[in-house]
Image 1 (cartoon, rainbow, N blue to C red):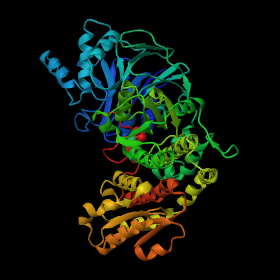
Image 2 (image 1 turned 180 degrees about the horizontal axis):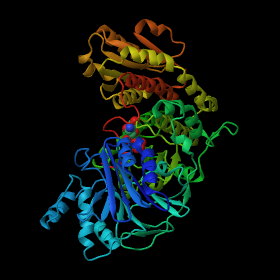
Image 3 (image 1 turned 30 degrees about the vertical axis):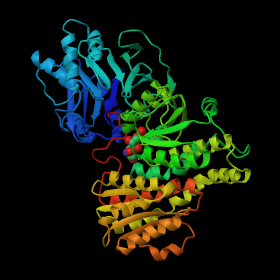
Image 4 (image 1 turned 180 degrees about the vertical axis):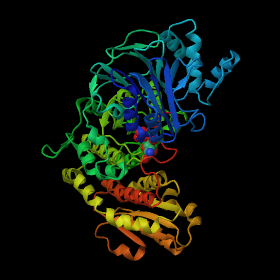
Length: 612
Ligand code: M6R
């Protein structure tokens, strides 16, 4: 989604801003811009399209100055175009702002500004904010005018402001959209996401909703919008810039698929202890889990790929830990009036920790007295901070828009959680426990073996890349795998429509489309319903559909029922969604490459969805 950066210090701000923006490109965007104080006033440069275009135009005609703000925009109000790109300026041109989020009452505020004679140059909701600030600044200081404006806004925002009249400082405020302050030696930064300023500084201050910041090269002052000073902790980012680079891979997505054994290893680290024969968590999480009542009801909320991880979690928590689990799309959960109480635990699964719907869902649940456990990848993110306990996935930064390693790390975290609760509730025999822990310990190696499917899947992808409709079918633990496989393909290859179904649902509708050559990807790994899946394969073959089947290693019998076969390592069924995910990710990746799609930044998609 949109990216924000800001800089104040001794360097040429435009260089810092462009470098930081380039690190946010992975979030998905459609235009970019910067505003720099050039000694005379605010100089604005904006361009629709990729950041490269903006860089080239700045290269031809440089902008000089030591303080500025920058933005990559993902269109919400108004088409992607230069005039709708940020920064937006006041009519005099002396104030510029960049904004992430959505101002929900912008139409009403715009009416009022139009009545006062303001002229709008863009179709954005953001432009009303800068005009409101300018209006209040007729009587107030910039800082007071900004604060007053914030009290009039409804919706979500992270806003950075630079003004010609205050050339030594930047202002920013956050409510519902992520924003952090980077602290350097004699310089300061704003960023919507930590990778933007990695390499520039490691010291960051995550802001809370309602925070208002005044940033100079030597000082950061945080207060509430009303002006009450607040203290925010400075934390050190402990991951490396190299983690946010492609390292020789053509795309981040491919790199991140390959990083899965390491990511899973990280998720298991310090939690799976084979010597002690136990699964453990940090003290806070253990306390949280140990306090769950016997009657505890669990609702998992999440979006997109994280929702699919949640569906896998439902199968395992019910089967192993005997807990009643519902899984909800966060965007539905928050509006359907769910029955919530203190015996309900919400598990919020999220890579970014900033997804607006998931964040709103946990806030609503907390208001009703429910407890919140987050499974989250980004440390210090909003959801991680607002949850009562967090199981961090530690998968490292995920840059590609299409989630891969974060997904398998989420499922790994759910396995840890399930097994912990299963043991705590005495629902597992010693022998089964030992074999589960062994399988879990071997999981990174098992996934490493699954990576060896790459060459075969690549060949297969070439065969199917020209097709435009795909079904993905699976049952039980691998019904979510089918949903995830289909999402991955349509996400990274927008030329293709792909749909995932529970294989048993086929005959209730989707089968009507099957005809000669229609490709259906089946997950037919070992499971109690394996034979039922084979029957579903037969139903497709009877209609001359093309069956691409993922089966367990050693299953040669299935060859006679398939058009294309991918073997994955054998595992316990509850680990299988992780192993199965690998060839399905490769398939989506190579089909997209064969179709020359922008794999890492598919059109219309954003990495972190911070608006509703
Ligand atoms: O950051 P989150 O895990 O909360 O994001 C949820 C979804 O937006 C995300 O999984 C999305 O579906 C991905 N692009 C999937 O690849």
